[in-house]
Length: 374
Ligand SMILES: Cc1ncc(COP(=O)(O)O)c(C=O)c1O
Image (tube, rainbow, N blue to C red):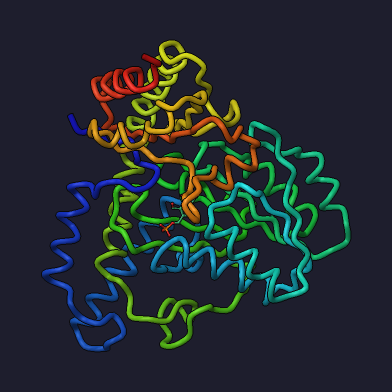
């Protein structure tokens, strides 16, 4: 049996998205910057996609800019906001995705900006009061806190954080990659200045993403060249990807409630079974977690060291939360930040509305087989 439990890493393209992209691929090969009919038609496809996405995310079309990925989007948003908005300090969550974290590290290396990582507990959460106190300091601040953590699934209250930032005059950047398409997001009511999404996380194609830049936040581009994306992101547009991303978001929005119910039920089922049937396990993260991610911590044993390998042999695709550097396996920066014990092993299982109970039962049986001492 083949079981895919790595939906937080990427998702298969939805059949409706494939159909739509195939049409665009066949019929719309013009360069959107050309003024002839074919060019104008391609431009129309892009602007229709932008309109669809802006409607779903409740923002204006002028606030959406297409990029090659969320990684590019976050690099642009973080680097350019620091350069262009007079940022003196970045307060950030140490559990940010590497595209945010490494951008911040690079900014700090090449500027006088003060980095302030938030202190997190073993559940990965930070004190809102502490953030509030920090924000009282008279320093132009950028706050970078993700909406949903991609490894342990923690859900951070961006609506509350946004309000605090707004009151304090701080710029708020939120990585919304793991929440867009999974839960409703309403940018008009959120005090988020900068955000980004990636199509392949919500059943769209890979290699296409977007940034949201609030209309009152003016930053310059990171990539220079042509006047595409209203001078914010040069380079001939990935029209097929853009069309596919908008279609995927449209489908995700249409089916959101139905999908969310199934996913929440799958998570409850899987977590209960894991905790009951596999001795010594716990679920990493806080009580407030997104329902498509479960990070399971397994007690130390020689069997557990081989678990990822054995899951793979059994046809189960999950994700190891450790990185191998110089031949030594170490916990990821997220697990290190929550002080996950080195001698235990964590594996991330991430599900979708496509995940069946049978797949989860099979996974539990394989986990049991390979964790029990003989
Ligand atoms: C939270 C988060 N941010 C950013 C990214 C990067 O997205 P992309 O694959 O579009 O570069 C990912 C992808 O894993 C993610 O999970």
